[in-house]
Length: 573
Image 1 (cartoon, rainbow, N blue to C red):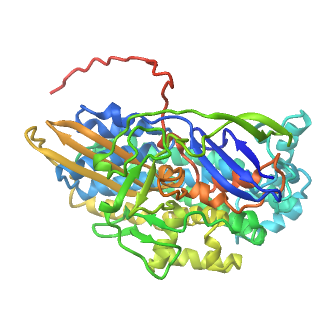
Image 2 (cartoon, rainbow, N blue to C red):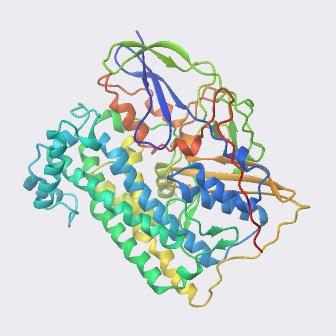
Image 3 (tube, helix red, strand yellow):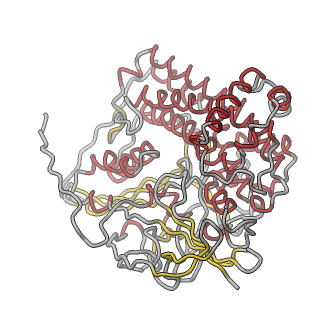
């Protein structure tokens, strides 16, 4: 007899997501449904506005990926208007992008995802001296893993436990049968969890050096960047360099070793190494480090065949809404995309509650619409995007910088290359992507410094002809995968705007052909050890680093106006 489990909300993510699964009498998932529960209306907000304002609005799509959407909005308009920013501006954007990635990936692992692998309660029984010795198995010079520091970390968390509350580590499935790290290994990871809280402040400061603040930096403009004084100040450049090096040190001596440790410990755990998700991979060129140099290249892999990388054809990208809460179901290219809501709600049904007993809950209507996320498709096929797609495509294309870190990781863990196609692989490739940036990101810095000696231009000139129509897009790779913004400009203002974000690709519901998105696909066939503690589901979904705030935004389902705001604009010549 089948049973239904609803996990709502999925916590430790950005935004609002619920997942429903149907399991058989052996607790194996037979069907899965991913539901984003809030609507995004940013496209409608942008209509009729000056295209130069697009980036400032789109960065408010999310409080985490602010720079990604800011840059995408700016560059989509630059593409439409035919603007090529000066090299100094391009390289400055790369340095800001490096700050974003080096903030996002470690924070995702330690603060959001690591607790799916690390048992905090187990760490309280660890021997700090043994843990200190254990750390040397994964790093030549372990980070924050001396016996004295590990003792302090253990005492710090034990103080929470003595008060009957684990503080930030409360309400988790500690002791779950699919945890595999030893107490000493858990203590090592716990120490790095706490260190990451400090490092993320450093990386945020890196972004603010050229962006003026973080989140929501404000130094990008159509045509280039405005942080001229910072770029011409050796002290500001030196400050960025020192903070980058401090962050790279954490990546190499904490983040990388912890994933080697996890890779070894979880190599035989079925719930993390047998869930490929969608086998079609999509990534796009990103991280320009010189006039003609990039860290990552574009490509498509179909059905997991890494022997054949296909070049991207933008005309094959479309979004449909057969199972999404929008009016028009048709598969539309984003230049023609529509965003008209059509909410149809949930139904009542019996599910398994937190105590493992049946309970009545709100569930999706399986044959109808069930998510605010649309279903993007490439040539009619669902795609998986993200660090896994980026690393695998670039490895398959023999990108030397990517290949070096992949080969080292496989050697250090003893894992086969096929292990990348899994929850564990998604988690590991996110770290590998951060390591490539940590190892090579300063190439952009060095080229910027060299170029500033002969050219100090930071912004291109341009005009907008109100009698012309323009069309342009940004496509690139951001921390959660392939992001694209598409803009039509007519009469000097935005006529239509669409954003297809990474979590839209991965979290998409089924399409008209019944094809699942990658969240849903990776759960089917998974065995759940304890239906009342579905850690396996949460761990798999977390491996994608969901950013549902990027995919959806708020609305009132009854159509009531939530608020009206009028902004006085003063024109300055």
